[in-house]
Structures are given as C-alpha cells and as structure tokens.
Length: 301
Ligand code: ADP
Image (cartoon, rainbow, N blue to C red; front, side, top):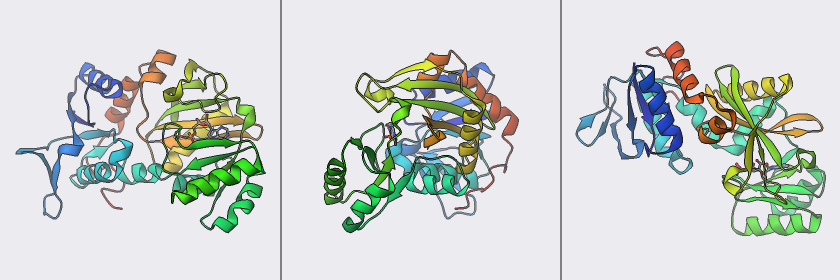
C-alpha cells in the first residue's frame, strides 16, 4: 500500500517509528509535511500539492496533526478523504477531540465516567461552579491548555475564586473540576487501536506534583488495567469516532474517569514503558481496514 504520514517532522519519535514499521511491512511510505501543502478545494477533482508535486495515489494516511495546526491540518485530512483516501482517524473525529468541552459533553451523553465538571461564562456564577464541583480542593483548567499547562489545583475556595477570576480577566475559557485526590498524582494512558487497548502505562507525577504529564517530569511504567478500565477506554475512543487514540483516565473512588482522548497519541512513552511494537499495530490496523472510500464521512463535516 502507499501510506502517507501527515507530520511536520520525520525525525519525531512517533513519525519515525510509523515510517519504520510501515516500511518493514513492505509498504511504500512517505512523510507529508501537511503544513506546506496547498489544495484545490473547489475543483471537480479535489487535489493536494506541495509546490509543483501533486500528492496522489495514497491508499491511506496517518494524521499526526499538531495541536497548533488543528484548523489547517484537519482541512488537509478532509481533502484526502474527499479524494477517497482512507484516513486512520477522520478529520471530524480529530476536530471533535481537540475541543475539550465538546468532548466531555459527548462522553457524558454516552454515559462514560467523568469527573464532576462545570463550565460557565458569567463571573457571578463562580461560587455556584465551586459548589457544583464539590467545593475545594478543586481543579481549574484552561480549555486551551495542553501538557498540563493551565491546570491548577486550588486547595481552598478562596484560592479557587482568585484563580477563576484571574483566568476570566485574561478572557480565557475554563473548566472547574472535582479533584480526584485518590488518583495520587497518577493517570493511566491507554493506547486504543480499533476496539482494543493495545498498550497501557501509568504516569506518575514527580514528588509533590498532582499532574502526571511526562512533559512536567512525570515517569511512566507498565500497568495492568482492569476490565472496566479497558471497556471505558475503548468506549471513549469510539464515542469520539477515533480508530487510534490515547485515552487518559484517572482511578477514582467512583471508577475510571476520563481526562482526555488524544487523536495523535505519542508513541515514545508507551513503546518504551511497555516494550510493545505499537507502531506496527497501527500499520496492521490500516492493512485490515483501509479501503477506498471507507472513511465514513468522506470529508463531510
Ligand atoms: P492536559 O491536557 O494539559 O494534559 P489534563 O486535563 O490532562 O491537561 O491534566 C493534566 C494532569 O493533571 C492529568 O494528567 C492529571 O494527572 C492531573 N489532573 C487533571 N485533572 C485532574 C483532576 N480533576 N483530579 C486530579 N488530577 C487531575
């Protein structure tokens, strides 16, 4: 098969592993720097180019769209879909998962476990939001944050009010969330492919840190997950419409609760912690599922 990896940088661990795994399995594979493409969107035959070179003949693409390129990147994926190319994660699903608020609402609608979470705009609602989240300690989150930036633990109601007011003053959208203390600064990353969790790891925040992000000095180790955690992770990916997803969950007193569903999950942490060939499994999934026109939405919004 001819496979395109939509990535800005072929030297990134995840990109180079996917490249290697696809080549090893005998595919014709190339990295497409999607940010450098231009598209003929209104034509009868939708097309994509980099400079003079037309990008055609791809049987499948693997989108690895960076958070700051979501708008343009999903347009490129949509264009491939319109051309009949199979995308392992569809453009609509990627857009959906990049909107934290929308994701939580969709997951809630399907009854997937979540921390109690509130959202408001009016400053007068601050006290009600704090009450809704069960009072302090609670977590205040910037909707636009990634890698743990803009996730604040407020130990008292007064601190929570100040943080909420400060974020509001900056015109930022925030979520107020119940603090899952019993998670002990750890979360579980489940790597989902299709209807399976193919690898999972526990990430533990460094001493004194409630955020487990590896970018914030957390450490990863292999973990055995429970059947309930497995089903929750697979359901969360399914609700988002993602075939490949990194589902983050916390172990709470009321069962597993979802933090986030990531549409371009990194491979480095999970492959190193579990010693599994996750990249190979992504390619294997594509081999089984990629057929022309099989992308469900075919570029439809
Ligand atoms: P980001 O998307 O920026 O990584 P998250 O919402 O995933 O932000 O939060 C970062 C980390 O902070 C999580 O992985 C988790 O360890 C911790 N965390 C976030 N929300 C809560 C919460 N409600 N209770 C306990 N810990 C939390």
